[in-house]
Amino acid sequence: MTALWWAVIFSGLYHGINPGMGWPLAVSAALMERKHVAMAKAIAALAFGHFLAMTAILLPFSLMLFLVEWARDIRIGAGLLVIAMGIYLLINRKHPRFLARVHPSRLALWSFLAAMAHGAGLMLVPIFLGICSIGNNDTGHQAAQILMTGNFVTALVVATVHTMAMTLAGGLIAILIYLWLGLKFLSKTWFNLDLVWALSLVIVGLFGVYAAYVGH
Image (cartoon, rainbow, N blue to C red; front, side, top):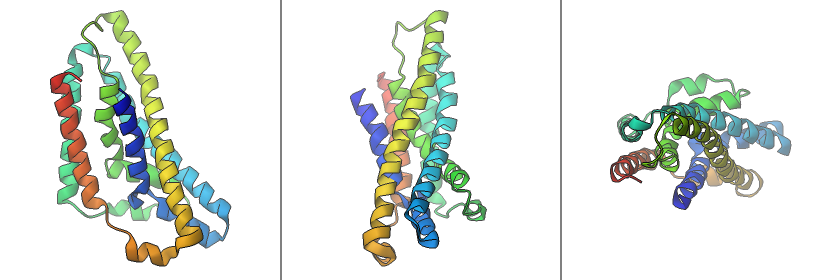
């Protein structure tokens, strides 16, 4: 269980490091307005949109676990879904064009759509389902009601912890680029994480299917 919660945190840090989740937009906002507060506002908007995307993905799965007898099937199906998303991103390496049409002032909306399009929320699903794993004795209507309530709250906590980690990592990188390293460093030294991102989805999905089969 401790390892799963650390996975929630590290996946958040990983999302924050990935420029596809928006920290370059925070740097851009600060440069255009020439105010430090502009970066803080942009990071807050990106965090809010990311949090909404995480909850939009996790909450339906928390309600699915109300069906106690199908919990294992749900976990396997979720793992296969994450694998499919990773394979799709490996094949289709182009960034979604609709993201470029979102107005720069609507950072929360952009962050929400970017997280959805890149499968950021799906990456959390196998980890979340592992945290909410159901024991053999958790049967019956009353137990199911308790599980549903607990899983709903857990989904919100997972989304919150993950988003905080993402905001910390992305925010620190944005501050470093803006105050010290500069855009020249960004253009010359930053590396493309698209391939790593897609492969990580496949790995997380495989982990989810394996964990469901072995009962963890």
